Amino acid sequence: MNEHRKKTFVVTRFDPDKDQVPKTQTYEIPVRPEWKVLDALNFIKDEVDATLSHRWSCRMAVCGSCGMMVNGEPKLTCSTALSDYGDVVEISPLSNFPVIRDLVVEMDGFMEKFKSVKPWIIRAKEKAPEEGTYRQSPEELDAFKQFSMCINCMLCYAACPVVAQEPDFLGPAAAALGHRYNMDSRDEGADERNQVFRGDGTIFGCSYANECSEVCPKNVDPAAAINQAKLLAVVDWAKGLVLPHKGGK
Amino acid sequence: MAQPAHPHAMAPSRPGRTRTAPPMKPGTWPTSPRYLTYLAFDFTGLVYLLVGLVALRAAWALGSGPEAWARLQAQFANPLYVAFHALTLAAVIFVGVRFFRLFPKAQPARIGPAKPPPRPVLHAMLYAAWIGITAGLVAVLGGIIP
Amino acid sequence: MKHLLLKLEPIIWLLFGGGILVGTLLLPGYLLTVGLAGPLGWLPEDALSWERLHGMVSHPIGGLLFRVVLLALIALPLWKGAHHLRHFLIDMGGGARDAAVAPLLYLVAAAGSLAAIAAVVRL
Image 1 (spheres, chains in turn brown, purple, green):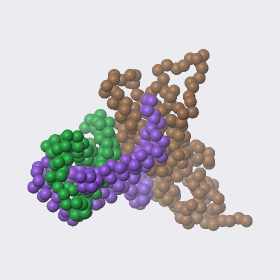
Image 2 (cartoon, each protein chain N blue to C red; image 1 turned 180 degrees about the vertical axis):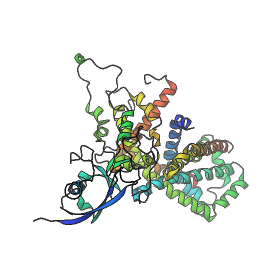
Image 3 (cartoon, rainbow over the protein chains, first blue to last red; image 1 turned 90 degrees about the vertical axis):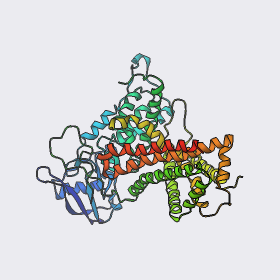
């Protein structure tokens, strides 16, 4: 039994070669009850309007590609049920990002902030292979594991009011990832990262909106990470007042 | 209708190959319940600033002798001051509830050898301190303890 | 100015954190009595009288505690207030003016804190 009802999708369109500003285009399509928003977008592109551009990949909330605003809220469209919405669904590109085309946003700014926190193990000296592996207890893993679950979907950047207003702000995901490495028992790079945390992108710009953690699809809780990082950066600063700084350039 | 975000929000350091549309804030800003609550939270800054200055005035009056203090007490009895203090109390409770919810998760798993108590325990400790300190202050200032 | 604000950030954050934690813990007791119950006549006649409060201030240990608590109650909320108000103004679109507004707000908090020290010393 084919259950088809129709829903109307108001989708933001922007072609940099033709449009001065983004506009919306309305599509009325039959939808299946079990569909996600992404299924509707793919139907539109496949059957109605091949010019629609949108990012997606894994369809199971691990790649982070399909982040968009659905009725004004940042969502992974592959995991957002159409049945949660009424007859009219508004889809627009992720907020707070420049838009390349239609629903595709410019990610390079995010990648730069990401790289600036040096998201890799920093050690003064690597262990020689003969010495064996780095050992890490379950408790040591627990200190950072949650923050390693980030899929870089950028929903947190779309939700954060500080990202909207402060172009230099590192933002939730970058700060959480930097903190993830600072809390990793194998890492020795906290000094370097804390300098980034207190630089132009200062994590102290975070004003406790907690929106990042509200919208995160992987329960990373970036708000917890960034606020833990603030305390650790201050402890680091206080130690620096008393002791000469070790390492860190 | 979504408002524009900062024109350079999330901008890359070098422009891309094509012209981009400017970043926009979410359509739900600022009127969604969560955003409004957040703005109210930030706005309590003004309330705290004012209550600090008013308390400063009270402290100054207390140190200026009985007549100054009596004048201050008379002013505090003015309905506008009473309303201000009542609103401030509401704001402080709002801040406390929101902050106490955040505080436990803002503690790192460890700082050196020190580890925080489990989050629910820390949450309960904050409320216990809040109630205890308030009761103590009321007892002392309220004349229950001579 | 932006560079100076970044350098001072840990101190400001500590004062802000203190303001939110200690200020929020202390303020309800003070507000319930000095702000509400006292002016509304719900307390015993002499509870907030100058003589009784001055007596507390003069006590060797109690007086010191009184001064410290009063200082915390005045100064710390000022820092919480300045910092939060600064962020409120940024959220309302005032990011460009932040370099000018933030120092003013923190100066108010600093001046108020110094005045608070003077106020509790002269009690």
